[in-house]
Length: 221
Image (cartoon, rainbow, N blue to C red; front, side, top):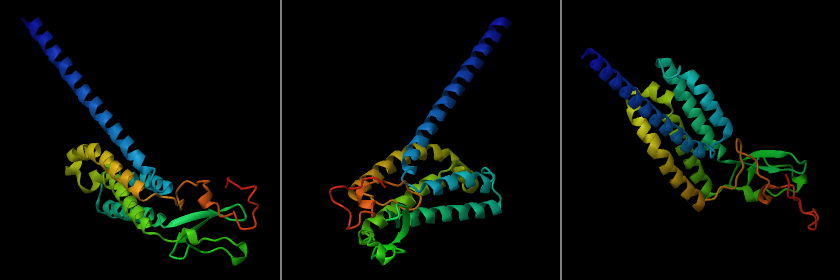
């Protein structure tokens, strides 16, 4: 009788461990898929800003074990990174006659600071557009998803929200991804500002000045 009871308890223990391992594997798989979904959206943010946030956030939040000072520091980091995502949308770059990449702030007249008049480079095509404000809003939305649903941020500011975090990570990235994708189709992004990868497309090769031979176009930056 005792042997049967021990065997039964052993089977229940094995079943319990098996259930726990299954749940853990499922949760891990869900988190990995969620991170992958967020990762595709992160590509739309300035690379340096994302790296700065992911590097400093565990430090300023004390890995989620926040005191009052940690909350202030974390808030400052969120604001700075959010502002940088917004601001970078209003920057652009071009390749000058010196074959170097130059960055500037988008204005209603073009890029600032403007190159010397002697360079004969026309930067009016880089002037501020309505779509820039759409892209700025989308950048803030994506960073808010990244920053406010970060595990350390959740533990720091709203630990009771942790049970809901997994559900939001399952739903929000694909939903926002579809929305952002649709908005970028409606308002294409052609800028390559501060923190964004440089493109070699013709529209950003300002080194094509008027005295360049049309029979020998330059396609590389």
